[in-house]
Each structure stands twice: as C-alpha cells, then as structure tokens.
Length: 197
Ligand code: IMP
View (cartoon, rainbow, N blue to C red):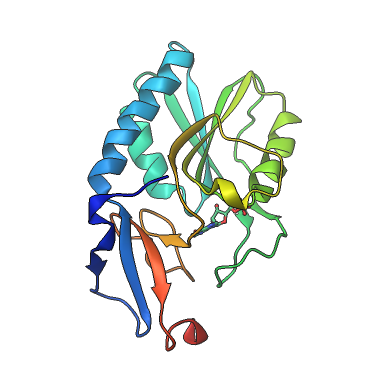
C-alpha cells in the first residue's frame, strides 16, 4: 500500500468549501513508476506495435505520459463508459458511451485504466474486447483499490496499490473536478462538503 512521507500535506488552492485534498502519491513518484511500467510492457512485447485503448476520461493524463515512455510503434484509441456519475459511490452499472474508432483484430492491445475499483468496468470491457479477437490483450492500471474488488478481474500491470479511499487528481475526478491536480490525492469532506457536490 502507498504511504508516502508527503501524505499529510494539504493542497488548498481552488477547492470548494468543505472539500480538501491530501497528497497520496506525488507527481514525481508517478513519473518514476511510469518509466518502470513502460519497461515492463516493452519487455513483454519488445517488437509489437502497441495499440493503447484509454478508458475516458480518467485515463487521459496517465495514457499521455505512459505513451511517451513506451518506445517503438504506438497508436491510441479511446472508449467511454458511464460509471460513477457525480458522486463517489459506484452504481454498479456499466454502459457503453463511446465505442472504438478502429478494429482491434490481430493487434497487441493495452487497455489503459486510471483506477481499478470494483472491477465491474474492466470486466465489461474485457468481455467486449475479447470478442474482437486481438492478438494479445493486456491491462495497465495506474491505481488498484484491491480491497474493493467485486468482479473477478485483475490488471497485468499495476502502478500503485492504494487503500480504499476516494482519490482525485492526475486525471481522476470528483464530479468532473480535480482532474488537473498533478498529484494523486485523497479527497476529504467536512460537514459542509459532500452535501453540495
Ligand atoms: P470500477 O468499475 O468500480 O472498477 O470503477 C472504475 C471507474 O470508477 C474508474 O475508471 C473511475 O472512473 C471510477 N473510480 C473508481 N474509484 C475512484 C476514485 O477513487 N476516484 C475517482 N474515480 C474512481
């Protein structure tokens, strides 16, 4: 589990009343880990063109940074599924909002997810992708909240295993806010906070 010395620092700028964030994983640590993940992926597929499929929108910063660390031929596509709406609790429902633009048949696919929580989203996506007959299908997630898992799925590559807390930043949001924080942070509410979200 991630426990970093900076974990107690509070970022205050641009926050709504009743909300605060605590840095869980500083941006510099994310950068170091992405270099390692890219090496691990390239070790498994040294020559293959890699087709990254990002799950919008949380994947955007992660995918952009990871792609720059992967040498060789790399292409992107994006999927969008509905999951959390405006709150912090999963509805458990997964609905396809945007499908892939190009075929994945015969390609080496790396699904890029921001966070693996219940696993319901990933399970749904993997079933969809497997039917399309890729050459290889792998999953990389930045964050894994392993204690929250409901569906029987796992990622092939995991950036960080984190505790069961709601995190924002580095692409992850709460009601579309906080995606632009450089660090991965835990979102905290006081009595004035959550009611207004
Ligand atoms: P799952 O289907 O429960 O695994 O959830 C996957 C999706 O839920 C992720 O791609 C995120 O969009 C969202 N999610 C889960 N946990 C968090 C969190 O702590 N912060 C922000 N979004 C989250």
